[in-house]
Length: 205
Image (cartoon, rainbow, N blue to C red; front, side, top):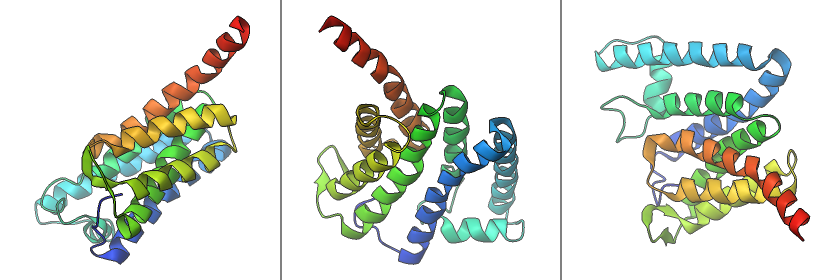
């Protein structure tokens, strides 16, 4: 949800559509298994790292390097473009760190929540967040709504609420490349402890 950076609008939209397409990793994990999906993601990531190394040395892998250049932000293209790597790491780590449905819900928060926040924030964002003026209130609202309504398909509303709130807070911070890892991991951690907290409250009351 970068503030007022709708530069190269088509490229920005393409970046976020690819980001949101990560939601299909849940489908692939169910069809092929988490281990197979992880192998696929790691293999693609290794190929991407090789492509980046060659790109920085004025060489390229056809198609892959072209897509990388097309989708890279202006402030990234002169060096290593790390967001796709952190994105892949975030999905694989989250998928194996948390049991289902918490793991899948956390991936929804990363893919749909963050994707919608960027699209809405960049296009309609007018009110910067005081502690991070590169992000907007509109983007955070979009993050919350997309995350909450998608995760309630997998987990109870109270669990979805706490995961969404924590994800939105982490996403609003100036975390840069670590955002793709921190958002799903922190969301998953808080969603994991929510049932325990609720049971403790019910027991004591």
